Image (cartoon, rainbow, N blue to C red; front, side):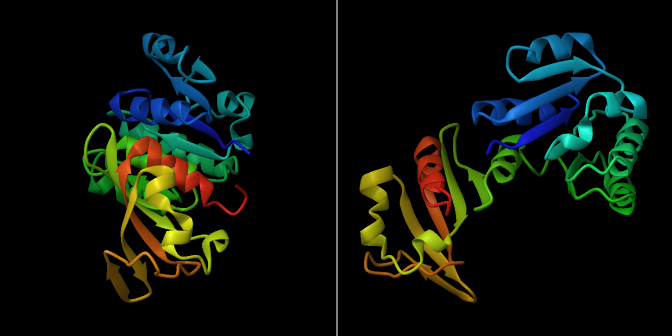
Length: 221
C-alpha cells in the first residue's frame, strides 16, 4: 500500500521532501501559506493547497488525521511550527516529523510530542524521505546525484540465503560491501556468506539499483 504524506511548508527543505516522495509514487498533500509556492508544486504532488496550519478547523477540514505521516517544514516562523505541531498532536496524527530551526526549538518540539525532529543543515530532505518510504532502510548517505551508500535491514525473506544465491550484483547492479551482525562487522563478505534476518547490509550503487534491490527484499514483495 502507498503511504500518504502531508508536507507543511514548501521551502527548500520541504520542497525537496515533496519532490522525492512524489518521485517514489507516494500520495502527497503539500501545504503552504504562500500561494506562489503552492502553485509551483501543484503539478508535482497529489494535491497542493494554500492554508494556515495554525488554524485547527482548517487542519480538520483537510482530514489531516487520516494521513500516515505529517512533515512540518515551516521556514523561519518558530511560533507557527510549534502551534502547528501541537494541533497535529491533539488531532491524533499518527507520526509527526518537524524541522527544527535551533536547539531551543528542538527542545520545545520534543516536549510537545514530535515523533522525529530534524535539522535541515544536518539531514538532507532526500535522505529523510527515503527513510520514511521504506521500513528496511536504516540510513542513507548520498555520494553523488545518482549514487549512494544505504543500510538495509535483512528481511525474513532473505534469512538463510547466501549472497551468491541472491546474486545482488548481477540482478541489481549494486554491491553489498559489509554486513553488520549484532556487534560484528563483516567487511567485504564472501559470496557464500549466509544472511540472517535482522542483519544490516551496507549496499553501494546507483540509487535506482539500490531502490530495486530494497523493494525486492521486502517480505511482502
